[in-house]
Image (cartoon, rainbow, N blue to C red):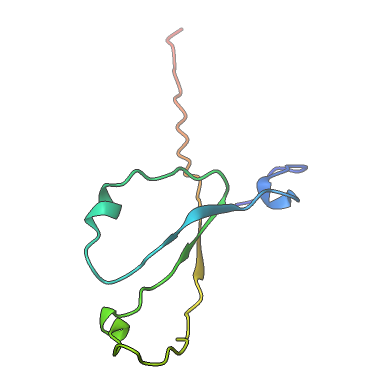
Length: 99
């Protein structure tokens, strides 16, 4: 859909602060009753982003006492995002009167 001439919208703006959540979410294929019941935030920009990080398996944490410690590879967080969409539904009502 075309915009009217000389229209300025957010896509033309420079310097809009990014909308990045301050929380890194854990995305695992398990039930999340705490997250599901938690309050959600509202979008403040047309692009909303957040970070996710997966947990390591709990079996990996078992070690023998006195064993030498070695560093494990760490998976970096993943930055995900979603764009908002404005829905519009216009209705025109024509009223005719008898003359």
